[in-house]
Image 1 (tube, rainbow, N blue to C red):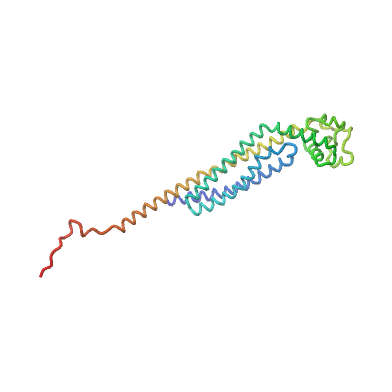
Image 2 (cartoon, rainbow, N blue to C red):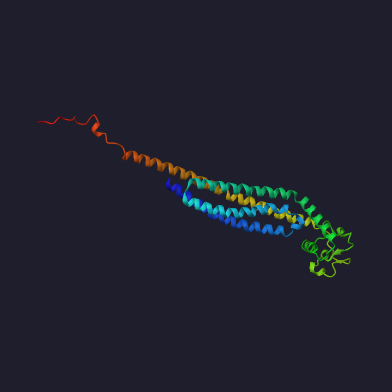
Length: 269
């Protein structure tokens, strides 16, 4: 029984090391994906970023739980091991919820992006400031995805001209002459579809990262609760052995009262 308990102990210790390493990898992956979505937050909306933000928070919490699991596995306290197992269950459930959430957002992201881009585009046109941060963000978007406006160059019909960025020139090239009516290489497609595909691709990465993390980390649930069961069995065996030993050494000597003992004789004078 002691050997079995020790095996589970070292297995749980090994899992906690891997648990912490997976948290570091999860932190890096979710941080990178959050950055990739955060760059275009003005166009795709903030709602798209919520699943990856939650996943990033869970990676930080996972590191703390891995440290707690290491300490409890070394101390071999059953109640602490059970609490650690419950915490791991919560982490796995929340990570799986991130997967579901990302897939839900992935399915409806086209509506969010269309509303966000249309509102932001109208705001940029209404300001009529070609050197403003909003206009420069649109210029960079045009150059990055080789697109123009939300649905195409016709979105700039009210202006009567399109920005240089719709011709592939960088945002700083149009500092003194932001609009032009002469462009031989005008991008004909709008930015809505390319940005929609970009957001869906990264949301799929977020969903797959959350699903993989939840599946791999769920193995620690079985290891932790099997360790708690092994500790419980070893404690019961230890109590049983201790009770038997105490009953053996504390039993009274009744040999003088046994029927086979010689009868007492009276002293002779």
